[in-house]
Length: 113
Length: 114
Image 1 (tube, chains in turn green, cyan):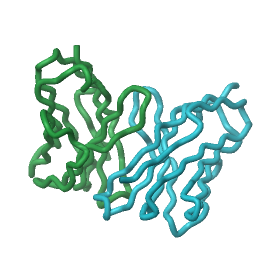
Image 2: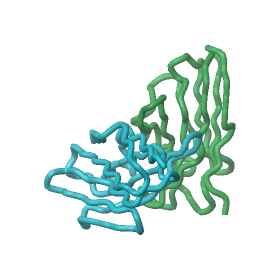
Image 3: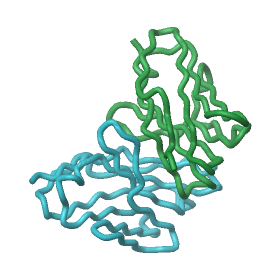
């Protein structure tokens, strides 16, 4: 049973480009969460999704960031017109229901140059 | 919203000694408190968790204690080994009330010296 799969592991983008981060949850998990980790800091909640629904996006910046979890395929975190401050590790977690059984992926490390 | 503070930020111990990491939380509605271990270049891995109806939980060399009145919880690692070296994060959640989001502490870099 594969764990939470995130790709790419590393992503380099120039300022102004778009970044697309993908997350495939564990089999049987219908809840997906995205967190951002700045260097030497803890993880900060961004968004919580279930299939085809955004449940809680209170941690998402109001502009340039969006997330989706379509009926088919992985969850996508999209960052438009990236800036240097977007450089961070982005982690996805999935769970079968709610807060217990959270499993994190290995993350995508985004570097904006 | 919930706020979690974690201390110390760095901790260095000799192999075989015990390590204790402490966290405080602000919202008395929080009812779930997991601890994660993060190794370099990897995602956080759950090592132990505790719910608010329990005061202590133990799993081999790892234990967690919870004081609801004082709103603090602690991770205890006994007989530390070099492979315990990593960053440890505490977290708190109000469960489904908060959309199942976790609020993390800032992390503790634990180094176990052989």
